[in-house]
Image 1 (cartoon, rainbow, N blue to C red):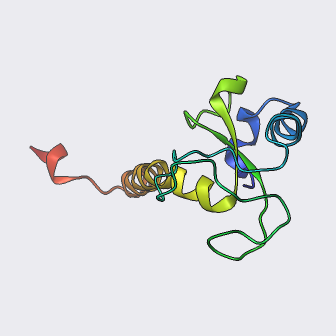
Image 2: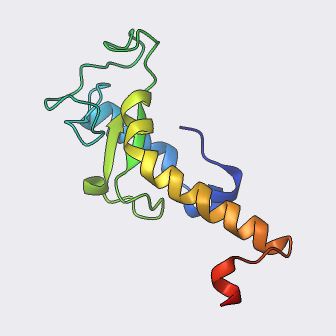
Length: 119
């Protein structure tokens, strides 16, 4: 997954090497998800880099997910090589929370207050 510009500084300078090592050396270019994504598979995902995805049929691009959603934490136990489908599904709740936080911050910056703040 592409790194958002506002998060670029949170990744170590050697992130490309870390990511490559996880995908190539440990995962052997296959998705390592074993159900963490909650999409219904409970064994290792069959998606392989550059091949059609077994569920979606799209070309697989293997990514590396931070299980705790913290880019600074690059401990190998916190990283999983995941296909796009598993990575996006795994991150769904995190994306929803982040979106809500950004929306609230943007409203506050624009001078909007919530009803709870007025009580």
